[in-house]
Every structure is written in structure tokens, then in C-alpha cells.
Length: 375
Image 1 (cartoon, one colour):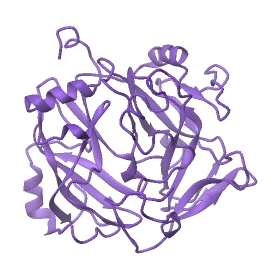
Image 2 (spheres, rainbow, N blue to C red):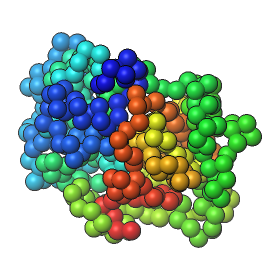
Image 3 (cartoon, rainbow, N blue to C red):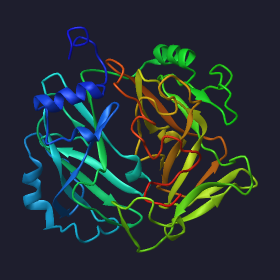
């Protein structure tokens, strides 16, 4: 860090993460995996089938638990079974400074094939987190929910972000950013007035809703997983026919759909969101009091998503990965479905999401499937 920025608090941009690689705080990392405010992690060929999900205790390493709670060592030449709980070592490890901590989330291509991943580290009873000053290996809990998944050493299933303090914008900060950067647009590219439509809640999160209309009665507005035993090779891109894995859902005439318990769905938001280069964003659950469902597995949005380098893009729809857990659940068009937290970067990243890194999802419209499927 420079003297000018070392006392600032927030999320680390790409140039800071690059310095962490050079200093050895992130070990065995590939700079080619850098994103504007995160870095992709890659799996090794060491993995285990576990008896169940777990979290280490305060003085307990992941390898301690493997000794007693693993069933067998896996071979990545064989596909992972649906609902099997697997633990795979990541190639990267951390040796963080005492004032730095980290959070992890699934990548978009992982969430959209219903492959659940959770980061696990030694001596820490929280998923997807590495505490201040963590020094040790990184492991990934992997659970295929809808399909048999074939993985390969080097596949990138999750990404990690770094912080030196609280980065989330509070209510006043997000209101100011909203007015300055015009963060939400409707389907006609009109700015959504936050005073006319309550899109900022009391916690400072932006509320987004589900799109079950799509503008046309014959338009695909979502997908539902098929109950099949086909194998999806995670390394293949633009390869699979969507009809072999998903059933398309068309816009309902009455504006509502019943989502079946334990099925997996892909939808998109009604609103178009954009993330200026000064910020990153994370999709979080709306509110458990609004229903026992999950709206996403891959919830991180890098700087520049739906914004571009200079604000030339008027937002992109966010894709939703939905499961209803306890009961069938009736969704209505424009029903609130998720919240977006905005995080301030210590300084703008050297590059932004989109054209500069050629992402598969930079120009997504509607419920776009993962990069494994033919367009």
C-alpha cells in the first residue's frame, strides 16, 4: 500500500491484491486469475468424500478433521455425486498481515449449475471467511445439488476478497452514491427514483425484485433443473445443450409461479443494477421473514458490472439462483427477492469488469445460464 492509502478502510482493489501475491501474503496464486476486486482460487487434485458438513473448532485444523470424518480420498477422474459432501484443497494458501481478513464466494459459473461451495480454514468456525492475520491452507467444501459434476485440477470454483475493516456503505452513504451514480435502471433504461420506489432499505441495502414478465408472453424468463443423472464437465465451455439439463420457464399469464420445494431455478431481477469503479457489491438474502428460500449462491459483483469504465452502460440484470427449502413457494412478478450491499474500495481498481477482462456475463440479459452451455 502507498502511504496515502494505507490508513484508508475498505475492500482491496486488484493492484493491492497483486502486491499481496508479490509479498507472499497470497501463496501459489496466478496473477492471471485477478479480478477488479477479487482473485479466483483454483482446486488441487487432493480431495475427500466427507461424512457430513463441518466447521473446525478454535484449535482444530481441517486436516485433523479429515483424519476422523472423511470416508475416502477422491479421484477427480470420477464425477462428484449429487448431494455428496466433498472437501477439496485449494492450490492457494494465505499468510495475511494482522490487519487483513478475507471473504469468499462462489463464482457465477459455479452457482448457475447448482454447485454449492464454501470456503473452510483452520481453527475458525465460520464458512467463507479467513480471520485477521490467517496463516494456513484453504479448503473448499463442494456439494453438487442438481447434476453430477466432473471437476479437474485447476478449475476455479470460488473467489476471495480482502479487507482491512468495515467496507459496507451505510444508509446515508448508499443514498449519496445512488444519487451520484444512478445505480438502478428499469427495463426501458430509465433511472429508478429511490423516493418513488423504495429500493433502499433501512440497513443501507438496495432491494431488487424478481422478473416473471420479461415483456413477452413467449419469452423465457427462467429455467428449472431437470432430474437427470447426466454428467457436466466443469471445464467445458459453450458445450452443452441447455435442454439436456434445464427446462425453460415462460412468462406466466397471471404474473405468478409456484416454485417447487428443493428444485433449482434460474431467474433474473426486474431492475438493472450497475457497480461504479469505486465500489464492489454483494448479493445477500432478502429477509427470512419473507420466506425460506435462497436467492443466490454466487453473490459477488466486481467494480464495473453494468457500469463500464465511465458509466456508459445503463445497468445489467442480476441472475438469481433460487431454492425453496421448506415448502412450495408462490412468487409474483416484481416481488422483492434479494438485497445488494455496496462496499467501498480503498481506491479504484486498475481495471473494471466487462470488456477489460472479457467476462462471459458482462452483457447478460435475463436468466443467462453458465458458460458451460451453448448460447
